[in-house]
Image (cartoon, rainbow, N blue to C red; front, side, top):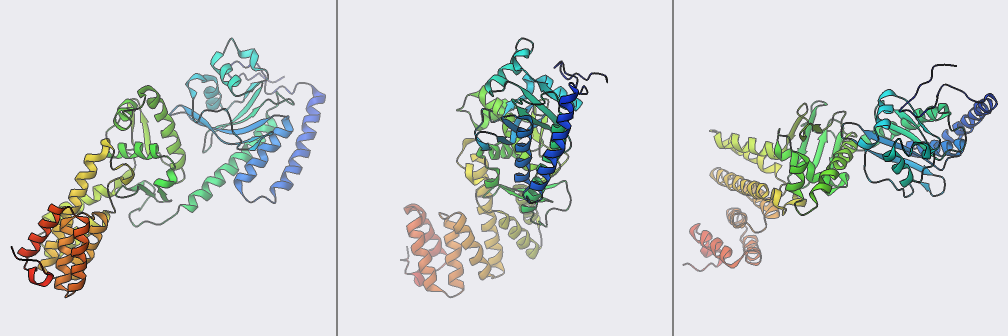
Length: 458
């Protein structure tokens, strides 16, 4: 017999064919099963459906009751099922897995993944004393027997069978199916990536990542765009934005939990952050071969090897250039570029939360200041159409802005549209507080519009 390979002391020789008659039957059944499976796959163009079909075939061949793809992130220390098939309840039926399982208790699985070795547990009771944590996991998942084969090119993890009743020690066919399943999984991710593809002029290479935070969170790479809605997790979005605001600094899980979710149980939140990082990495893999959030010995940070740049950084840069510009035309150009970046409050879905509120207010004031500076500069050049355009946008974003109404009415007057100007004045009276409206009236009087708009002189 060949040398025994023993992964984690599970006590089985994966190269020993065992009973020869059984092995002959096993080989014959493989041939028949592959033939029938191939005929079904020939009519299946959806990679997800193909993977489900392959997992169903695995359960039938081994007479198991569940087969699934377990994705493992060894850096973060979490794992979770991606796709699975249950013989009783069907595809993606409810399971007893936690949303994220922590891998630190299951060292033998991690070692087998590193060594590219299978896991074979014909009877979980046999490991009850030696591996109590692993045994308790199997009990929770209703597993009496477990068989798993690793994959490590691209995603890393295991194709896993629960409660196999046939060929319990023969992982060869499961390894064959493993390659087919992971091929389908990679094809699925490739198709999902193509759906997100939008060419952005700000992206020039694979390490560029442009993230806009004004209004809605949006991430753009060479491969496409990922929106806040597509992240499908407000907590993941908050975690990412917090790290972006930290710049190049690292944040510990405890710091993140205390800052963003101070009212929640700190220990539970710290543990959950691992899962949030893991889920974000899974999603971001559609857009990049690199990781946007990196784990460090002291916490998490934005990957310093990527060229990550944000709209709020560009806003500050263009505002700074505009304020230093000596040329009128150059100043207008960079003020417009800065203002056009601002599509709403910084990370609008969390604008009222304490951890980001000061930044939200600061950028809103900077935006309003930039618009007012642009209006004054445009007024020098008598470009009233442009003033009207930017005043209109200003009122959409800040509908209670006295400056917005002032410049809108001013532009209407200069363009000889008195009725439209009066309409804006009535709108201002409805939207502004009484003292704000009075301030607007005083400014219009000083500008000499009293007679045109029926404003009684002081």
